[in-house]
Length: 443
Image (cartoon, rainbow, N blue to C red; front, side, top):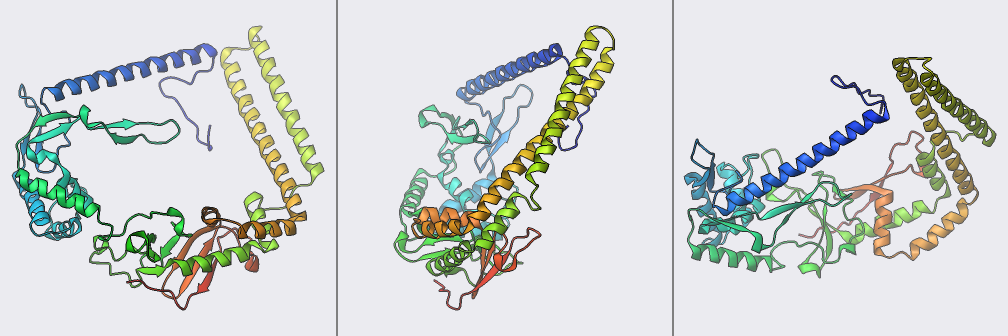
């Protein structure tokens, strides 16, 4: 039972004996082995048919249609006449009219053209760039391009591209002129190498103190940390509200899309340092994180722990006596299982209470020591804060601040702990307002 939820097996009860648990483990190992064998056979079969020139996946490039197997006729790929017209329009507008991928995406969205995934009504510039990079329009579609890699402890497996030598070519009907496709690749490469066309990722990720923390008060979007002039100009935060991809009928342009990063960073950092120098703030924050209540007396803790240990020992002895009674045939198996289950739940509950009591005892000791040395801690923090470099300051801000909501004249700082000026005993996150009469707007 976990989180007070009981699991009931309808076909087979949970194993209660070592033999039953061993049988379940053996069945699981055999099932895992069969699963791996099936996956390996499926992979080899797909590779075989891909080398024979057959499509093994229904996800085909935009402009083509996957036709399923029909009797003895194998699956194949045919040209989608409606989508091919859109592909040719994309290439001509990109090459002949020098449109950007964003302009093409906005045009297709306004015309109501279905997206490649059919999941949304609006085209994204990345979908346009995928079409511009697709080599299948020249008559060759490559399969076996990607593979999944799983790293222990890294969560979901990620998809990575295989080396080009492992790709398997497949002939399809060409739909574009090779000269037009080549010119599109040249324009793509040229625009990707030009740093002045659009904001680029930060060359120095540690240049903005409040990176990932600033939120636009008008649009509600997180503001992006950027540098002008290819990373050599002003530091500023940019709201994604003016992005044309986000402009819909019910939305308007952001009135304050940019703000000066240096001024905002300095004001927020000075306020955070001022709060850290307050002894009452440290005690209130520590108490909220560690206990939220009166600390237990040392003698009461010891007595409660002694009682819990005695209950744990008694339950273990009762369990051993049950096993002895079953071996002597004094009780039946069903009675043994039911009574032992009750004892196991009792033992787990006692162990959990002992662990919680030990944590509370340790918290009480730490809080008591902090209360005696809070002034020294504040002085030490003030000295360390002055000597911090930018990465250390960014880490400290991410731990202290939840978000910073800004508009044209003020910044609302949401801290992760109560403020000493108005200590919040309910544990709610507190906010303060900084008046900023001169936030620079960089247009």
